[in-house]
Length: 113
Ligand code: HEM
Image 1 (cartoon, rainbow, N blue to C red):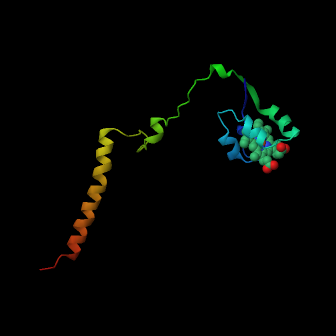
Image 2: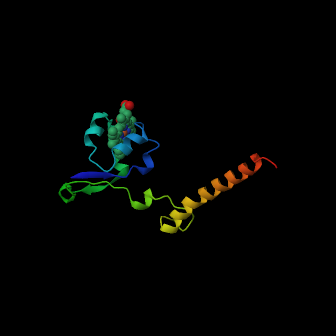
Image 3: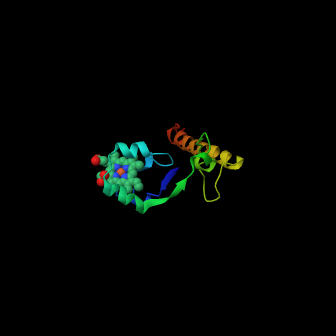
């Protein structure tokens, strides 16, 4: 059995640091917790964040992490984007700006006959 704790509210106040809790999230952190040599007061405090128990046998054997597709796509505007038209626009806009800049600079450097 695993005891589950929700330490969201405790992140900023944990004397061992918020990152420490983050690195121990979503896994069995018994060893790390014991290694830190927590006091009885700390163990008492844990009760405040106790959520419940999880039966290990119900957990998947392997854990695979993946990045959700929407997290990897940078959207353009509120409608989001990743479609074909957006890709074309993303390619064309810088191209048009570059062409305009080149045309303008070519005109100002061109010999005046
Ligand atoms: C609900 C969970 C937790 C509570 C309530 C808690 C609470 C505390 C408290 C009160 C202290 C101050 C020292 C003490 O009184 O023992 C402390 C220190 C510390 N905790 Fe936690 N802790 C929790 C989880 C964890 C976890 C999962 C880790 C995993 C690495 C961790 C690592 C540490 C470390 C490294 C220190 C610093 C020890 C030191 O510098 O003396 N804690 N914690």
